[in-house]
Every structure is written in C-alpha cells, then in structure tokens.
Image (tube, rainbow, N blue to C red; front, side, top):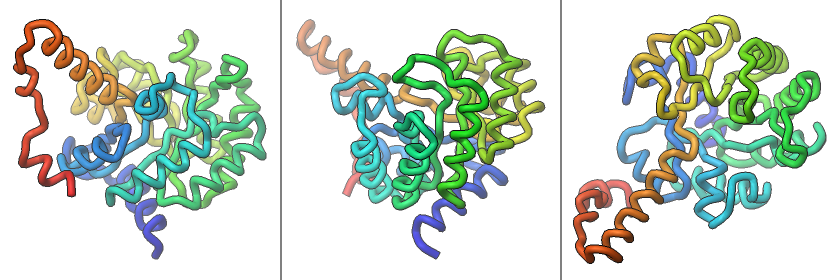
Length: 271
C-alpha cells in the first residue's frame, strides 16, 4: 500500500470509527495554515488536519480565494510531507468553471499524499451559489476523478446570506447522491438545526466550530461526525501577534511571552 492509500484509508476509517482523542465519538480536525502550525497540532495529538484556504492565503499576505491552483498543490505537498496524519484539502470550488476543470484539479490532488478534499458550490468568479443541478454535476465529476480520496461536498448557502435550511439540506442530499462521502454546510449554529441536518442528509456531517456553535462534546452527542475550525486558528495567531506588537510599541513590556510556545512542545514539534 502506498503512503497516500494508507492515509486515505485511515482518514475514511476515522469517519466510521472516530479516534477517542481528543473527544470521543467525533473527529476533531483543526486547520493549520503552514508547516509549523501543522507540526504543533500533530504534536498536540490531533489525528487528522485540514488546510484552510483563508489561512493559507493570509500566510501569503492575501485575501481568501486569491491563491492559484498551483500554489495550493505546492502547499498540499509541503504539508503532507511534513506530518504523518491524514490531511483534508480545502480546494475551494476546485478552481474550475466546468466539470473538466474539476476533474483536472482532483487529478492533481490525487497525485499527492492528501487524504481528502472538499468542493464548494459557491462560484467566486460570479459571486453566487451555483444552481443545484450544476453543483451536483461537479460533485459527481470530482468523485469520478478519484476512487479513494475522501470527498467532502460543501453547501455554502449560510456563508452567503441564504438561510433557507430546506434548500441547504436538499443540496447536501443531492451531493451525497452524486458521490460525496462527507457533507458540510458552514454556518450551522443551533443544536436543533444541526440535529435535523444530521438526521436528514444520510452521510457524515462536518460542522464548522465557530463561536456560538455547541461545544464539541455536545456536537458529538448530536451525531456530528467531524468538526473543523476553518481559518479561526490562523486569525487567532495573527491576533496574538498584534497584541504582542501593540504591547511592545505601547508599554514596551514583554508580558506577551506568557503566551509563548513552551520549549518542551517546540522540541517535540520541530526538528
């Protein structure tokens, strides 16, 4: 078995039988934005990680959705080479206007050691959610391009001001029928809403753990299969940098070092 095949098999199994740590009954999959953050999270014991399009773009000094497909593939190769846990790739809309482009992008991901990837139904070039039939066709094309990458299909309604839960559920069901292994609708907050989506979509559900969502143990009891944090860790790290720099520019003190990464963890995480 190749390294990629092993990572993909392990990742798929985590959705069927989540590891007991850090939270029993749910796969907790945070999002590093560079090799250093990936190594720290792995050293802390997380069993799977995911890229973040916004966090990665931020590390390059850009806004989200302002990286190229080639830059993403290089990023994936760098991260998957640095740690030995499965990586899910935030592939945005697969950087493609048509199904042929989707197939090409997934083929490039399939040639890496990525364990899975996500495809969104939001079209950043037109700034709109794609029609359901078009979006489902793109999910099917993504599925056809790789037999073993874990495929997550995302319904982006709630990130773009569309609160119609019936439409979101219909989209997730259609994406499951098109071949998605995992379903994801960023922006679900209320426990009863999450429970309804879990009950109706018929496949493992990823929830974006934003402020206001139930705590992770409660999400596990609701039947959520996996959680991620998107770009929150990246922006929190940048926020800590701003606080430290503001202290240095203001009082001129160094109290910020109380948040410094411990030497023991640095020794464990970094070569």
